[in-house]
Amino acid sequence: MKQCKELAKQIRIDSVRMTNHGRSGHVGSMLSMADMIAVLYEKILNVDPKNPKMPDRDRFILSKGHAGAAVYSALAAKGFIPKDWLMTYYCDNGKLMGHISHKVPGVEFSTGSLGHGLPVAVGMAIAARYAKSNRKIICMSSDGDMNEGSTWEAIMFAAQQKLSNLTLVIDYNQVQALGHSEEVIDLRELKPKLENFGFAVKEIDGHNLEEIYEAFSNLPIMNDRPSAIIAHTIKCKGIPALEDTVKSHYGFIPDDEVEAIIKRIEEEE
Ligand SMILES: [Mg+2]
Image (cartoon, rainbow, N blue to C red; front, side):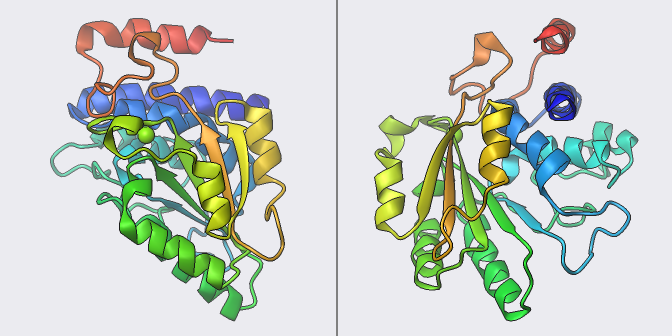
């Protein structure tokens, strides 16, 4: 877990620096999922930086594409892209677009408008079944994603097709662009909702690396249906003054606060 912890720290630090340098981004959304992205890229996903289009690779779709900088950071750490691309994020003529883009090696699909990731992941899961491949299809969604009708259409279809190779991960920090989720569209109680729609569901602490690893390394949860992992997370985890705040959703850390925040992240046990 030491490597996962180091990568999670790196993702948080890169997210702070990239969004500050690019003068835009969604730092709270990135820090919320940093621990899960670290475990996925260190321990779970069967992907190869030397051969990013390897046919039987696992597919990871980030449906909350506004948080793409966290994935770019992991891709740089694992050797998919040069590290010096990171500081071109959100810049004119930069290599890394503000929302996640499939033009970046290692990224499967471009997202940004919510509700697109899971429908595509369902198609990929069906394709994997036709190809008789054991590859995993993992889609990470947000609170805002779970408000979209297209997400629930995909959930119904995945259950009907018994897509046990598909996992929906919900970065469930219960904060989204315009407010706390209970004030926007309340998703509660999410676990029985998903179970009634035909998914096998596990709830985890999305910042506990062991729990994350345990959940991702024991997929599918049940053999006859798709899996959902509800990860209880804290928006902007790692920057206490901004944790669980709506204002951390869209924004970056101002210049005079960056170094102190990075020092704190580095020193965190
Ligand atoms: Mg959220």
